[in-house]
Image (cartoon, rainbow, N blue to C red; front, side, top):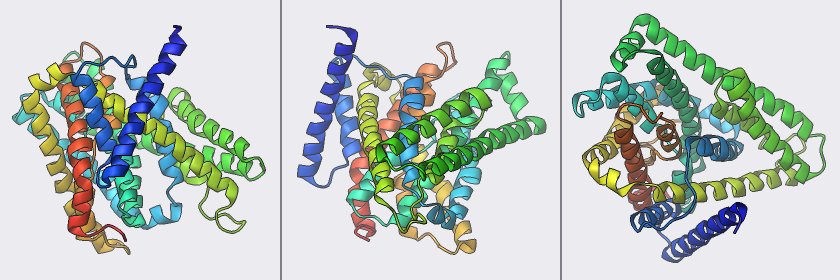
Length: 411
């Protein structure tokens, strides 16, 4: 059997497993598809069944993430996101650095990580993943406004976290010791450098993405072949990502977000959403569904049980702490937002924002990108995989019950 045939066989096996999981979810009615996928993947890892496919940071960030992010951006109306921009920006620009600081403090004081390693660990593990929780929201008919807020925050959160991670990791690699790198970062000039770098990388990515999306939309309006439009969006999403990352040195993820927001508007000047735009959105929804299905199965299957057990105390502690830190940032910052926003976020919605903060795809990709000789690499990777498992399996499977308990479903 040739390599391509072997690869295709492995992919078909994964989709067959996913199909079985989908049947169980449909039959049970109150289970999370993504949570069960990861649980089944974990079972595959424990039983040591070979899948023949290994995840890497590049496979996730370059192969899968642009499709998932572009689909998410296409599903958000700029008008709706603008209405929620105050809490989204507060949680991203203010909340994420605060959360990193809180979790890094615990990593240093409680687990003995050097300060810089603790900051990197917190930056890796905290990016949220909307795909898993939004699938549950759709199944439980949660209000669209909440979905927009959760997805909008997560899309920006991921891009900013990747920019912070890259900046801190570069500083570490350019320094003789982690202590020297941390001392350099925590000076006023060091903090200013990090802030400016994140602003340039993140803001530049968004602006470039908006430019690419606007050009793409102008071309799209002159096309009558909807299949051609889908091909155009692939060029915009992946081409924009690669140009942003490789040529411009700005955030590819945020470039994809910006492009997706303007590429296919939700209300065209031709009167509502036409059939061509609907076809494009459905095509990307299907692509993102397949990508997410493979990702969650593979993430579960590539947990190393021995590493998981060796660092179980870190895994359990981090899994609890990321939820606690999420609450410590969401509740006060949303309270501030409610004072100035025209669309206050209810307390029940805040509960879901805290419990639905899954930390899966981007954290796993960043953890896998650490160099082999990086200090505490095994501990970080085991803990990040553990938090990902906890979020998608425990939080994910309990999410339908949480939604029913606080009464925000079927809105």
